[in-house]
Length: 354
Image: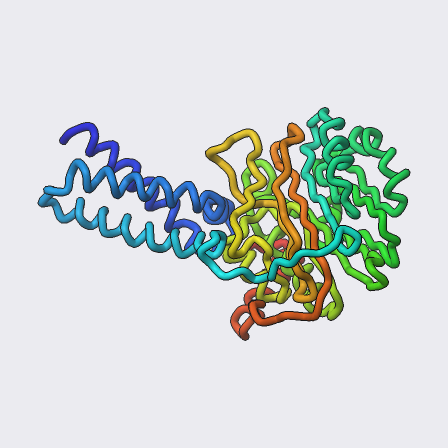
């Protein structure tokens, strides 16, 4: 057997494993972590199909043709998964033009706690001049480096921590309410802030749950539970609201889709692109981990992945305006979705992985 065919067998088998594992709805990290590289698997599948057809199209082996057929079905499946995050798909949120004085501008940046390029973040803030800043992975050193933001952003919530889960929130807009929650873990904070924008109250949920990787958390249970708890809060809040932060989950995962159904919020990425924010230093390993999810009151003005600040994440900014509610494209949860969401939340609270 030629070495080229052995190599094709090996990579086809490896790809098969990484495609099938996420279909198992279990919380153990091995099943969840392969949700992330869907685009990479799509490209690898195309390369493998091309290689099989170029070099072994005359094969008589049933196994070879079974592999080729499976790769073809995999290609279709992965295309279907990533299609909503391309310009070929329908958008969930309409885009509009608006005067600068009417837009609400936000910036989310996972700064990477051990990153010392504080000036790059501050330069980006000065350039973009957002109304609201949400910084993640912020310890006391980061707070000391950016605390002068208080002069321009007099309304703030500061939760520096040394465990890579510190949060800093700064706003030019007055805060009607601010709340710090520890929904699942006593060391993992999230926030709720009601800001006054154009004489209206906008509720902002900011969070950064743990990822399902061995060095952080072997299960996605706590991450999924926290995301879904915030989703239920957002649905119960009938006025304009948005959820933002590093969710440690990709836009196309089944958990994110369950979140959209549970919260009835909308994803501005859909129909526009992936807007990948991680990994900033590894171009072949990039996917969308940092998110904004908006209630149906909002329209999109623009959204950008910003230049590197020497973190492992790119910052991501968004500008929006409030208009009348448009719920035509929202997702809704059926009985089975609601039961699954409740089961996941209970599992997270009780520390019992599914």
